Amino acid sequence: MTSKIILGRIGKNVRQQRINRKISLYKLSNLLCIAPDFLDSIERGKRDATCRVLFRLAEVFECTIDRLFAESPQAKVDNAIQRDYPYDS
Image (cartoon, rainbow, N blue to C red; front, side):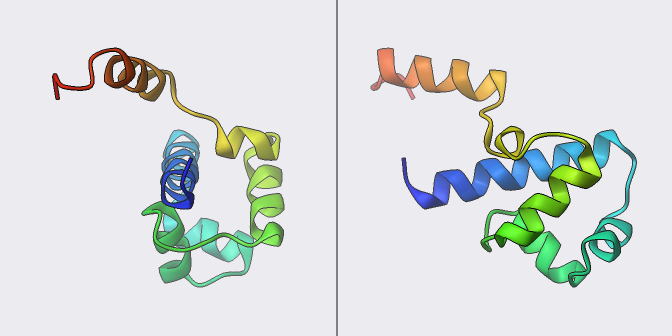
């Protein structure tokens, strides 16, 4: 698994958790003590989140850090289809 895939996965999970909790990007960046542009880059999978930021995100979202790395159920289905039928996409 490449770092690009992991960064994308973390970003999607962070964005989904933030949206589910109805927290603005600006407010979450303030809670994390980081710039809104940096948080936006994390959510888009363009920048690495530091360990400190990951721990803080887990704390704010009241989840474990591994939840931020988790693959979504839809992604699991998509990956299984791609694996079983690599020429159909």
